[in-house]
Length: 148
Image (cartoon, rainbow, N blue to C red; front, side, top):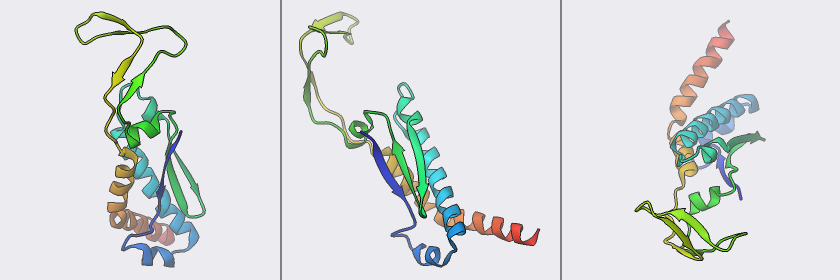
């Protein structure tokens, strides 16, 4: 189950400007937005093993980019979970260390559920807040290239 978030200029005050850009410049702008969102998502992802953060990828096409978390459990982190029972899979009992340090053997555990953590959407939102700064940098780069 992957989680996917679109990175675009849609819905921003900047959208009218973006529509006047040639495709190459617009793609550069979207690419920079996506890169900022990627790094923000990578560094703000819940980090127990790092697998979730390392599963984040960017796909760009047709003037848009998508940020995806490909870890099989990404959807559960982003959307949260309801309280639920956990049963052993492929075994007769669950075995784990309790907070007390005791080794526990049981056939059922009640999980209280988890709160949603939409870290990818927050990362995209944060990148979109920087659109004018990104545009200024891109514009300066374009001017510099044109004068070389």
